[in-house]
Image (cartoon, rainbow, N blue to C red; front, side, top):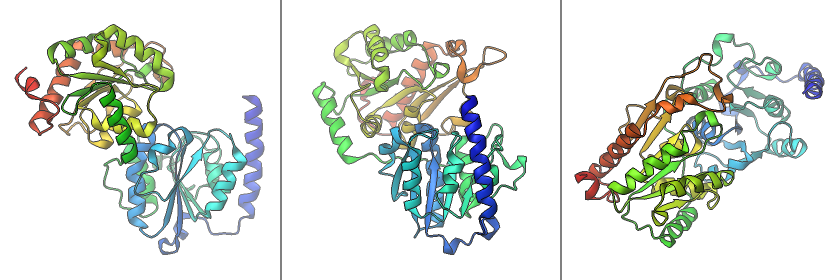
Length: 393
């Protein structure tokens, strides 16, 4: 860590000299929208964070309809966003100075006029944006000031930084507004790849899932333990759902690294012919296609939950350490049931918590009730996969 801090200190010095020698007028007040031809939007963290950036990308596209717009996105998730209708290209980002030279080369080839950093926590994000050669670099300043001098809006006051309690979507839209975009549509964008949808249809058919069968998704893992509901509770929920609805199937989703945990939950549920473990079997575009097929998803604050929201699929969202006000779906939307519990510990360890006692406050009874409510609402709305048994159960 000390070596990295030293190297970053050297980088700061180099870039300060470069900035002092830069004779271009890079202040945001000098931006002339009619002269902008090529734009890079950076959202370099998780799936959910990048989905939160899609309304900002759309807003930039609407403000600059004829511009070439590329996205620099985390390489693990890039394929999920190649179908985004507002992006002309995707540049993979590998994180914290990894593959630095090839990334810089890709950015330089882009010949960007503007870089909009919708979201990016890694220390190299602002330097990469500047060395891309773009004249204007904008982002909402955070608490770090090390590279702020490279921003075209570097003179913003601390009050112009993140707003406590504000939804993550709004923070990204504020970046788009810096470029003159309206940014008033908060709907996330995710397009299912047709080939992936065909693969998933074959996958489900091969496991005995009929088109008319209701399919409930369980996202049992999360990026940190602090966001996870407990496996025994998912297992109990699964047993109850299968007992009540004889045609219902359960798909347990997760990353390849979560496959064994997903299998353990599936084994605890029982009735193996009605429980599918998809973790590790599907690519991210195929996961999106699967989520689009679900009758309802049960998930905590995860990328899979945000996929469901972006695709307009019903979901039961489980929150305790995280707050739905910041990352959750619209509570006024009837497709979503949000279960928000209180933080049990004071002080809260946040994302570093290894055992989220607060998630224990979410009971199987209330999640089960929320699932049936979501299924009933879908049936009333005309989703034939739900069937009459849910309405009469």
